[in-house]
Each structure stands twice: as C-alpha cells, then as structure tokens.
Amino acid sequence: MASVATTSAFAQTLNAHPGPANNGGSAGWAMFFDLTASGSPLNATSLTTASSAGANAGFTVEILTRAGSALGGPVGSGPGSSMAGWTSLGTVNATQGAVAGQVSLPIDIPDIFIGAGQTVGVAMRFGVSGPRYFGTGTPAYSNFTDGTLTLVTGDARSAPFTTGGSFFSSRAMVGSVTYAVVPEPGSMIALGLGAAALVARRRRNKKA
Image (cartoon, rainbow, N blue to C red; front, side, top):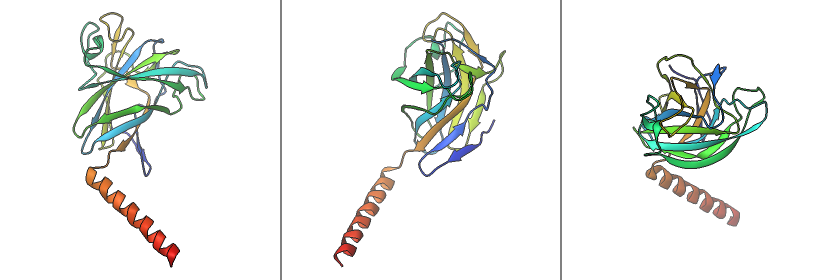
C-alpha cells in the first residue's frame, strides 16, 4: 500500500495508516514496525502515533531499535520476545493531539539511522497511556512507501521483551514518520566549499 508523502527542503514525512485507530492497549504495551531505506542512508527524526491519552494530554514513548526486522511471533518467540539485539535510544515525552485516542502531535525522537538498503526494526513502548492502532484479526502487514523509505507495520505486545502477555499481528501504526536523507561526504564537502566561497565574496564586497 502506497502512502502520500509531504516534503520540505530538509525533511520528508511518510504517512502510515490514516486511521482513525480502531483498537488499542494499555500503558506498558509496545508496537513494533520496520523501516527500510532504499537508495540513500536516512535519519528518522520524529513521528506521530495514536495513543489512548485524552485530548492534549501527555504520555511517554520509549524508542528501541535493532538491526533487521522487529516483526514476528508468536508471543513466546520472535524479535519482540526478548531484549536480545535491542538498544534503547531513550524515553521521550509526547503530547496527544486535539482528539482523544487518536494521533499525537509530532514527537521528537532520538535519530534512528537507517543505512542504504538496510532494515531497522523499531519498537515504541508506551508509558502513562497505551498505544492505539488499526487492526483486528490477523490481516497481512501494511506496507507504506514513498520510494525512499518503506514502513512495514506491525505487531503489538502487551508484555514486550518477555515471552508472556499477548501478541497481536498485524496491528498497523496510525501516524507518520519524518526523516531526512543523510548527505554523502562529497555533498558535505561541496556544501562547505560553497559556504566558504559565499563568505569570501561577502567580505570582498564589504571592502569594495
């Protein structure tokens, strides 16, 4: 399933499931999804996601990543059944949007680097409120792409990184991921030279 992306000079946003969310869990639950970069390395820098929080209420999200897919079960196996291979990037504060139980305001997350052609598995562990998502039963994973970044979503666990609790698949993330292409070293050098030339020109003009 393709998704419409919005673009600025510095970042691009890949929209996931448009919602509204129709299902969800409690605080402590986690959602799992995959990010794959196509031709260029990327940094995922922020996201929006649906939560069970009230309108304009605060909650927290812990961001964890692993090399390779985050997806798969059942509850007693799969990447989300233990902390093996996972790294916590930290817990960030989030704010629910104007509609209770639906999409948050943009959440500034620790940058998630995705190398060209690589897949990074991501987990979002919710605090204070629980995740909201789209899905019931066992449909296929949802795939959203803009040709640069691909998002495959996803699974939910009530007791993440353990072999207990409940495992639900698929459960699609409602929200979006914002990312920026990482410039190649040659591009950075060219930008630096261009900036230096501009400064030198301005200095010459001031002297004239």
